[in-house]
Image 1 (cartoon, rainbow, N blue to C red):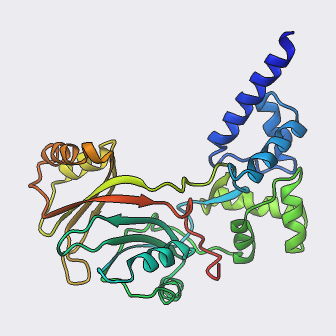
Image 2 (image 1 turned 90 degrees about the vertical axis):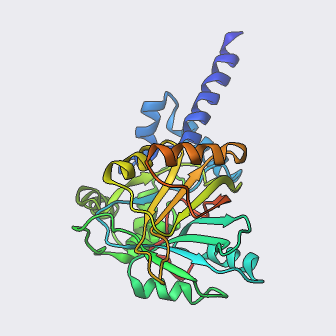
Amino acid sequence: MLQPHSHASCCASLRQALLQGWQQTFPLHASPFRQMAARSGATPRELLSLCQELQRSGALQAIQPCWGDGLRRERWRFAFEPGGHDAALATALAALPGCFHLERAAPQPDLPPLWAEIEALDEAALARQLQRLPAPPLARLRLPAASAQAQPCDDPETAGLLEEGLALCSRPFARCARRLGCSESRLLARLQAWRRSGLLAGLALKPPPTPVPQPGLLALWRDASPTTDGLARLQAHGGVERVVQGPGTPAWPWRLSLVLRTAPQLALDQLREIVAHAGLSAPDTSARLLIEQPRDQALLFRTAA
């Protein structure tokens, strides 16, 4: 009598574990689902079948790479001026393989309605993506690189195939290796070397980003110079998603930008509290946002996607 209930409970627990994802910890092993099953209490067949079912329903992605700080790349933040093409521009931005963060601001005088962050391997790759947009950016800022010791990828073909996503099957690395024309052991050795060097943080099995835009708030200062302590307080606040310092030049006229992820009814009160805690004056401009995540991370090697 208790066995069906126990089995149902086990399946529910396994489903929840899969939906929480193996964040950067998907095993680099010839039989990864066998290793995962040993930790989850399921059989490899049960685990793989459930993964495939969740993927068919759209609740789980293919196995994805998570690039590490050791991979050389560039990150840029852009602002786009108001115009009659805002919806088309937002759609085009979200379609760029390098775009992983998009903000739509409520209308405000002299405030760009669209903000985006894009990663690319280099400026040439970035320029090719920007050429696809119906309008050029109004302002741009190159954000600090992840690591001064970062190195370029030594095998872009393998990296591009990883970004397509590994199949949910019993031997995903063997299937990928066949497409590359190499052995499974050689592919695994390369991925393990990438992880040791920091080029690859790991592989992940997780749900896709939510398609529902999340509410937030954007605050901008044209002339603000927070102290080191004040900047640390801003960055440490739980609701603050982004703190961006800029040069205050025509290319990027804001010296400080703050993106707060919060419910609309709490946004202004939280902003006042955060600003006071950091010892800053009130921002020159603030506006409510809808924050979108087109993808988990930039597709750096699939620039034709």
